[in-house]
Amino acid sequence: MSGLLGLLCSPIFRMDGILVTGASAESLNMLLWNFVGAVCILCYYIVMSSILFLGLDRMGLFRVDPQAETQGLDIIKHNEKAYDFSKLISYAIPTAQAFAALG
Image (cartoon, rainbow, N blue to C red; front, side, top):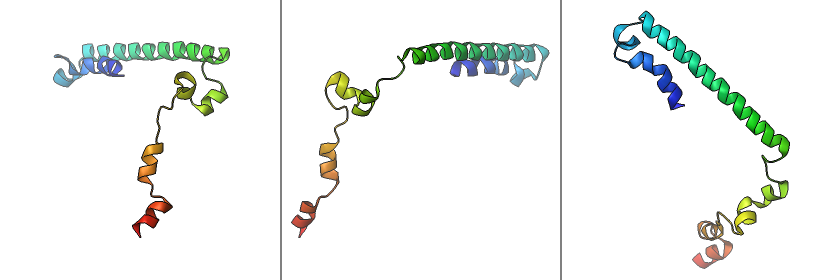
C-alpha cells in the first residue's frame, strides 16, 4: 500500500511538483499517468490473486478438513496446545474453595 501511496504522491511532493509550483501541465500529466499505473497494478494483483485463491479453493487445498479445524492445528501438527490458559484461569477466577478459605 505504501508503494501506491508513493506512486501517487511523487508528482505532488517533488521539487517542481503540484505542491511547490502549482498545478502545472507536466505535474498533472505525471499524476494522471501514475494513477493509471496504480490502477493497472491493482487490477493485475486482483486478477492474479483471484486465480490463485479460486484455484486452491477448487482443488480443496485452501482449507483444512473440519475435524482439524475444530480440534486445532496446533494439536494435530505439533501434538501440543498453543495456548494453555488452564493455569492462568485457575489463578484468575476464584473458586468456591477460595471463598470458603476466606472465612
